[in-house]
Image 1 (cartoon, each protein chain N blue to C red):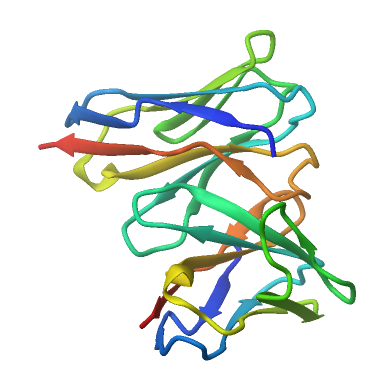
Image 2: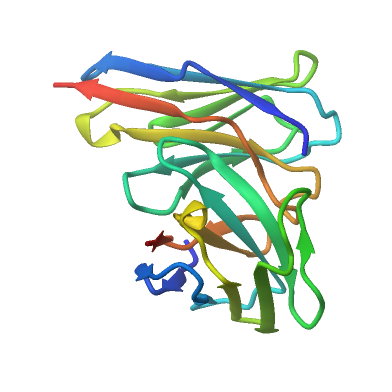
Length: 113
Length: 113
């Protein structure tokens, strides 16, 4: 599987601030880019996903920005809340969601009250 | 979102025994299910892709004779860890593919003594 590079490894943000997590990929065949949120001892939950035909997608406080030419995408969490404290994974696949996902290494996000 | 269940949620077994983990899509039919493995504080690694009615496809480095996968119906896939050893201790997570997205189960914590 091709690699997806995720940064930062860990992130501390004040309550109400903007959390930004970045991912980069190499495989130009990737055509589906989801973000997952995982709490300790739980399975990942799909937050938001984007396909390469759009540059931005927003759902509530979560926004994905996608730069096809740079092969990068990022997650922005607006008005970050303590309940957002979790591990976030970016992922990608080349089957439009039909293939197994290649995950980034994850970002441990802490929102300080 | 769609619901995927796993059973059991945790299991402790002795070295040399076999353990079966079930993955069910509760409110949709999934022709494809995936099995991932996650070590503590690490990312998810795809182990195998399971298609209903056919043999599973294993990722490089995953022993197919050790990790037996059966996808007998559109709502059920099972992973059997045969002759488990302590190094097989991990968090096993399944996902089921919906129309566009993958939905993850809550995971199964396997501890091999």
